[in-house]
Amino acid sequence: MASINFVTAHDGFTLADLVSYNDKHNDANGEENHDGESDNRSWNHGAEGPTSDPAVLALRARTQRNFLTTLLLSQGVPMIAHGDELGRTQNGNNNAYAQDSALSWINWDQADAELIDFVSRLARIRQAHPVFRRRRFFDGRPVERGDDGALPDIVWLRPDAAAMAPADWDSGFGHSIGVFLNGGGIPDCDARGQPVVDDCFLMLFNGGDDAVEFTLPDQGYAMHWIVEIHTDGVVGHQLSAGAVVLVTGRSVLVLRAPDRD
Image (cartoon, rainbow, N blue to C red; front, side, top):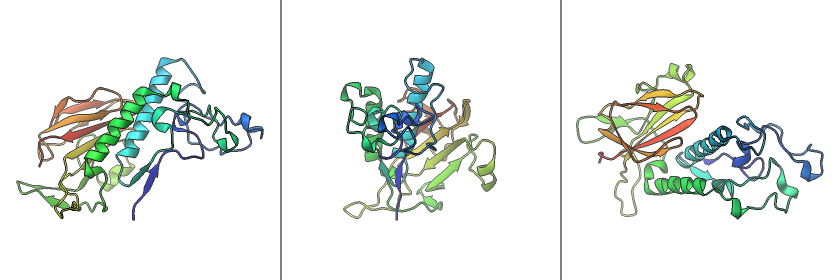
């Protein structure tokens, strides 16, 4: 009926280690590093383990924010491994079943306060906006708005703001994609039997290395957009329909339409 979504679990790397190690480091387990999964789909971002390189640390932090944004703003039930919201590390150990020690405990003194604040903001947005936690699947059909047009409950967009066609999914820009969530297209009712209506959101994902120019959709979607989440920038400013936005490589931008019923 629904999905349980997760990036990390109790087995494998923590989120902080997922972006800090290319290889497992399970020497403390006493099995000569033979235990644990070797295919971790991880990336150390240029240095294996602890580093003082500010560029590496900044990219690691952004990647964690990207993962958490994608997780918490996806449909379905988000599952966060304990401590990932505050940067818990196991020093590259991806099989800590044998470690009832500082290696597997949470070090509260080293909690990442900025990451905690970021995850808190994501959680508040998810809680406040039911468009991110629909009870039914999208159907892609137009939703009557009672004005001069209709939009589907979800629209996948190319960087030029055109709706994705089937061939676009296999094109070279597949790392960069936008998705429009129609707050007027939620097929749910509240406790009083009234339709659930929410703001509309636009999420822009750039998984490539280079910055990409995204054109915001026209006024048929929304007149203005407010930046609610930016994994590599500031939030709170307003953008107009049709504006061109430069989205940094490996970052996510989440926009909310403030002028839609």
